[in-house]
Every structure is written in C-alpha cells, then in structure tokens.
Length: 156
Picture 1 (cartoon, rainbow, N blue to C red):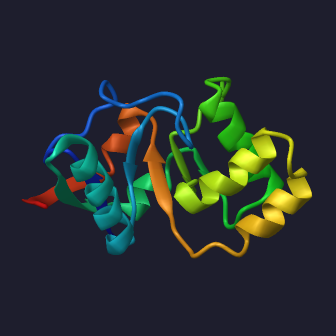
Picture 2 (cartoon, rainbow, N blue to C red):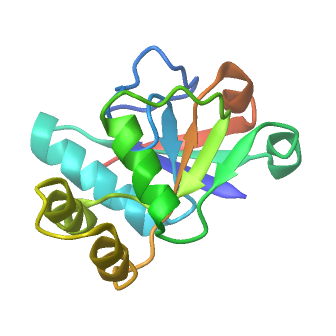
Picture 3 (tube, rainbow, N blue to C red):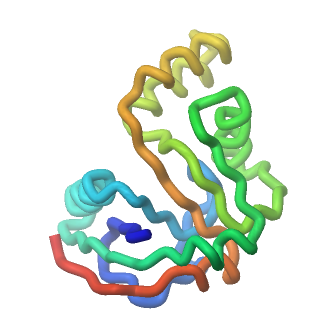
C-alpha cells in the first residue's frame, strides 16, 4: 500500500528522534494512505515554516502484520481515551503501530468541547462520527519504521 508523509522536508530515512510526544497517537512517524490528507499536512507545514515536502512510501502490510498493531476502525470512546492519554503523555502502551482517525482541526474543536467539560463522551463520539473520513498510521518503534520503503518526494 502507498502511504504519504507531509512535512517540512523529504524524509528518506524516517526516525523517531524528531517526533513530538503529545500528539494523537504519541511519539512516532505519521503517514496516511490518503493523498489529500498528506497534502493538507504539507499546506499546514508550509504556513508555519515556509517550506513543505510530500514524501511517498510503500507500506509492507505483511511485515506490519507481524508487529503489535492497535487499530481504531471508528471514532469511539476507546479512541478518545487513547488520544487523551497520548496528548497528556500518559500512554505507557507498547504498540508498534497505531492506526485510526486524525484529531484534525474540525475534530479538535469537538475534542476541546469535551476537554473543557462542555460535552460528554457520548456527545463527543456522536459529533466525531459526522466528520469526514481520514486516517493516520503512527509508526512508534524502530521495528515499525522498517515496514516503510521510501519511494520519493516532491517539494510543495
């Protein structure tokens, strides 16, 4: 499967040393199989830094299948709990790969209402189910990074 990473520069050799910790699925290298989503990541990066690059990889699903993978098939209470733990840097799980929905700007507004006590978990999940589909894959360990083969990149 082809996956994309939208960032500031080409990433021919992904690593974990440059990852931020308090994000959706914790520290890791994030990719998506949705080209438009990766392009939006590039647009966001370009607004912040003035440069952006879209990197493309082949994701070896067979190799990934031998690792510990946590998959969220939809927005759910479990997904929300995991996001909350990861953003608070309280996640202590040992998943190699985490797959699920992105807490993007629209999703973030919904999450903020939850975090600020203006919406219950149930209301938050109901609102999230109305969001447009997206998907992120977080490669959290060195073993997980080995499932990627760099194909190329282009400046945006």
